[in-house]
Image (cartoon, rainbow, N blue to C red):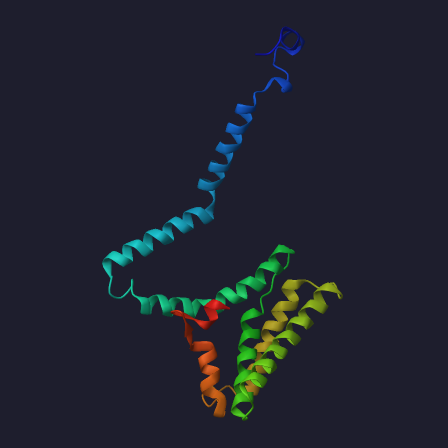
Amino acid sequence: MPDAASEAAGGRPDIGDVRIQDVTSIKEQTAFEKLISSQAFWVAVALIAIIVLMSFLQPEAFASSANVYNITRNFAFIGIMSIGMVCVIITGGIDLSVGSIMGLVGVVCGLLLQGGQDWWIALLGGLAAGMLAGAINGLLVAYAGLSSFVVTLGMLSFARSVAIVLSENKMIYDFGPYGATFKWIGGGSFLGLSHPVWV
C-alpha cells in the first residue's frame, strides 16, 4: 500500500511502491502477446496445420519417407544459402546474387568433371569461383562504399552471364570418370537423410 506522504505529494503511489508480482505478471503477458502477434508464429501454425491435414488426406503420398526425403533434399540447398544470407541481413545489407553465384559454382564443377578432373578438384574449383565472386561483392561494399543492393544486382547479371558463356548455354550431363562419386556426394543419403541436409 502507498504511504501517506506519496499520496499527499501527487495523489499517486511512488514508483518504489509497485509490487514485484505486478511487474513480473506484466512481463509474462507481454511475452505471450508478442508471441501470438508475431507473423512467424502464425506461419508456423499454418504450416503445421497443412502438414497434419495433408497427412490425413494423402497418407501414402504425403506422409511417406520418400516424400520427406525428397522435400529435405530439394530444400537443403536453399537452407544452406539462407544461413549465409543471415549474416548479410544482420549487418543491414542484402545479397541478390546468391542464386546466380550458385549456378556459376555448379557450372565450374561440371566443366572440371567433364574435363576429367578428380571430384575434389572440381569441388575446390567451384568453391574458389564462389569465394571470388563473394570477395568482389565484399570489397565493393565494404571498402568502395557502394550499395550492397547495386553491387549484388550487378553480380547477379555478371555471374549468370559467365555461367552461360562457360557452359555455352547447354546443360552439362557428362561428369567424366568421377561423376558417380560427385553425384553420390550431392545425392546420397545417410541415416535416411540426404547429404546436403547434414551439411
